[in-house]
Amino acid sequence: MTVYQDREAFIPYSRKDIIELCIRDGKLPETSLQKFRDFCSILLAYYHFKLHKTLEILKENYAPFNPDANTKYIVDYSESELRTMKAKVVDAFEKILEKGNYFPISKASLERAFQEISLIELKTDINFDEFEEMICYCRGDIYKTITIKKIFREFEKKIDIFERVVLLIKCTNTNDNNTDEKSLEGSHLVSSKIYISLYKNIPKNDIEFLFPNVKISMTLKNRLMLVVPAIGAAIPIALKILPQLLLIIGVIVFLTFGPSYVEKLNLRASQEDVRNMTGILLATLSLLVTLGGFCFQLYSQYKSKQIKFQKQVTETLFFKNIANNAGVFQSLIDDAEEEECKEIILVYYHLLTSNTSLTPEQLDDKIEVWMEQNFNTKIDFDINGPLNNLSKIQGKVVRGNESDDQIPEIPLLTYDQNGYCQVLPLDDAKKIIDYIWDNAFHYTYK
Image (cartoon, rainbow, N blue to C red):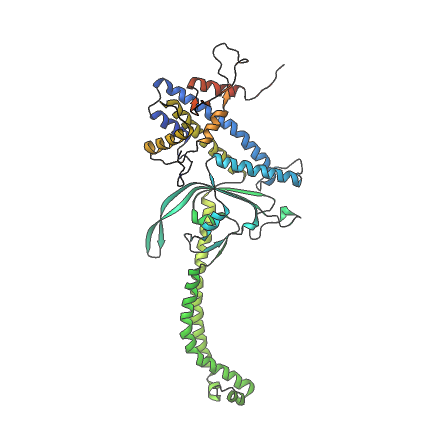
């Protein structure tokens, strides 16, 4: 089993497409095509029902942390209860993300990404100490070519993009009193709430846009572009106005302390200079206005970049946002349901149609090669997840008028003594899932 560092476990096809790809492969006999479709249909329904329970658990524990809640509570949770509920939310949240083939991004990786220059050349900084909880997961690490406009020309640039980004944040509680009314400085985040967001198509170097406490400043290049030209322009202006400045100082001393002090300080100022004071001040003021105008122009360029950055942040949060807070759960549950079912279908199909017995490692490689050769899609298939799921799907195969009381439950997937994977035929597989459906709820009727 090969491990790829440059591939993801995410399968970029829908469940419906995976079923059709298996059927078009041509290895299933004509009489088994409808049976295979039926098996996949009941499997999808079973996982939808199974993951719905996870969704309800998430919603129940997230309720007191939901900033968008519009319902009231009949109980007041204690601090220990809130800590337990928060831990359940975080744990279930991460498990669902992993089932959906999202991968985590560590704080260290995020900090490295922040150091990279984004499409707008401004320096950004995130203070992670302001977060009690911070979870960031991504999926779909691809390269995309975009067109960038620079003054009078356009050029294409290849950038690294995450197709999906999920962010969970809970701010650090800095005040034990009135926490519901205290918010993170510079934002509207309340420390007692948990904020969750799902985004699409976020450039890797622009991921800091998603954080509410992002601070921006000039890069070294921007600072040099502001300071160096200003110094270069200031030097000749300073040399030009220096004699006039000395004369102004001399006139001020002349008027304040008299001619004797002018001679003592070796300054040049006479009564004639005093009479010409207005012209000197006007000339000096003109030079200072010129220098100030030049500095203002450079500063305006920096502010223009800052406004452009803020505009891009706004557009990112508005146009690239898929869901927020409790609404994210439904999207992630759908993703987990999709990925788990696709993986199970691929594993079951390849074991069902294989002419030879396969170990988990051989099966993993077989699916990866099949996807690459037939559909030009490179994935790092996660074989352990679907094998565990298939082995946990257990039920009874009831034939004819048999009573199921004496029939043992069997799993869809087993291993022989040599470690080879074995799956039940389609008819039996359908009966097992149908048995699970029939016994999903147990009620005693009198």
